[in-house]
Length: 167
Image (cartoon, rainbow, N blue to C red; front, side, top):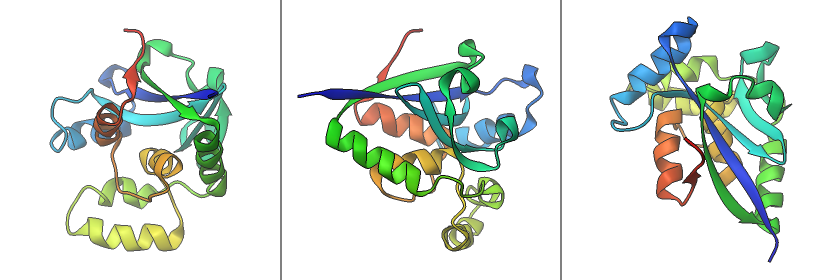
């Protein structure tokens, strides 16, 4: 059987970079995901192309970008990998492509982690068809639109057989 390797790259939040939103995401979601790395963003990569929803690098939501553009600071990322069959790879890529160009879910990145707003946000976000990083990547991998933080996604990935690369 031919295998395709996918990577999940998790951005390590660090107050030194003056990215306040990264610090807030990583800090707040730590309360619900203790003992996980201090991460605030996630990218899904296959064959040198990254997929996620972001406002970084002039993006305005769900996009594909070259690995070297996204991961330009390699020491700031934790990488996990997992093998998939060609059929699984095709399905993951099809789901990712289906939401390409959708806007970033700015309201959801805040409201999704504060009850009872999360219930409202779930309905509104689905209706608006807006996505944030971990939600878009999780959808590409599973076909399920789920409210999931980068920290929770890291925990999910480890539980589901993703292996940590390097450091």
